[in-house]
Image (cartoon, rainbow, N blue to C red):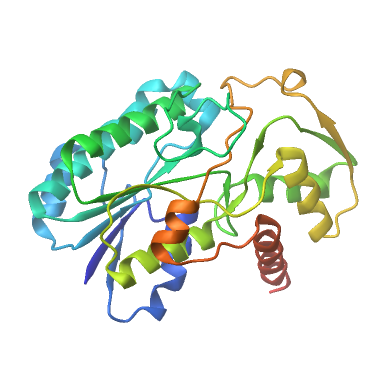
Length: 288
């Protein structure tokens, strides 16, 4: 089975790349913007015409949430138009698309975990462009998986965990917002779910939510990063209003995961357990 992974230099793509050696029945092609510019429809068409794939895992995205407010055209080109280009190519070549989306398609105004069929209402440009990408897929394809996830981190790439570790080594105190609630998600755990979908030949297509179990605020997340890394720092909780950013964030973006758990027969680890594993891995890399 031939599988294309776009945006392969990001957190999720890197996690997938690290585990593919355990799946010898699959042949993976990992590409990033240098090999495939998803915003160029001609480039996409030629690439798909020249190769034979059974699945496309689209990890490519413009994920700079605040930057998207000023660079709306870039966010739209990658998160919407690029996704539509891929969906059209998948349609022409009968390829199953696995696309990664976000909790930021919701406005955070309810206080129970979001179900897949809850009404999206993004608050920022990033969430809006990701939602439009989802809508494009649904209009073009029947055989697709859209997996919404939240607060993604990894031992690869730039993310909140690495930022906290860096600040913890540079400062005596920092402040982190404590009134935005969600679930940190280890990209390695998400990558494993994708591999389960491939390995099972799972064909109950549609939208699924995946994050780690448990909930917390960004303050809780930071506190756990410092605890598990034995970092001594003064950590102060502040409100969103005290730390204004260009993009509005949902106050509550916990995802309900019942559908994916029952469909795949899986148990999902708590975010704190997965965070410990990630920090342990980062510590081992630092020693080497």
